[in-house]
Image (tube, rainbow, N blue to C red; front, side, top):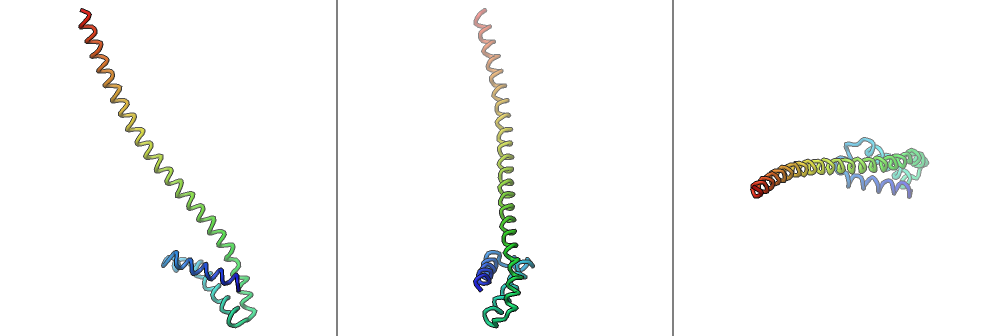
Length: 124
């Protein structure tokens, strides 16, 4: 009953967390129905079939672990996307800085030519 209670609370948490998206996921919906039926049979009817449904619903534990891995994969993918976006921004900033360096080098060349011209004109 304790395990079924925890699985039932997890199902309620999923309904609250996912909202209407919960009902579009057949796996979550089926798991919740199995847990509710098993809990009902165990608590109210005290039949042995509830134990059978408990065993069937234990596969849900495996599914929860799998979901945790999926969530961690999604978090890693989100971080990778964020890093790629930051990299693109840095690449753009680098391009702008390189353009600025090229422009400043041109200005330096012009000023150097003017200085050379001024030195030549003062030497004569």
